[in-house]
Image (tube, rainbow, N blue to C red; front, top):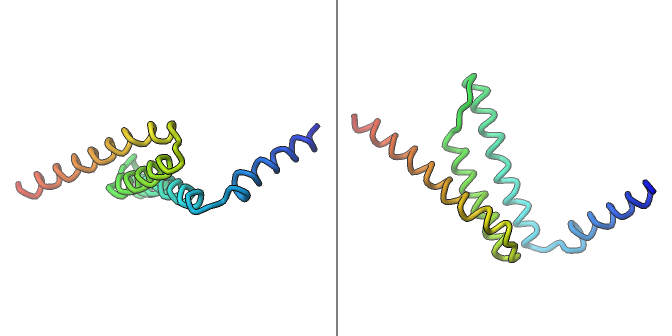
Length: 109
């Protein structure tokens, strides 16, 4: 039973990551890595500050990773990815706009 399960898992992973490998799979993996990097940036910034901090780099990586993931979803015709990323990218851009607005207001005072 365990051998059969591990064989099926191995076959599945081979099919997903090797047999179907193409440019868009590589692009999607890179998109996910960029998107995941934002958590590392946020964690490091928070540890350095000794409190929870969300740096601008977090939002930049969110936008880039989200747009790359959206492009991947559109190319692969993945409705779940498209639905998940469309609104998320809008929210990331809006957060960055609010940060920039606050910085401009602070500089003008």
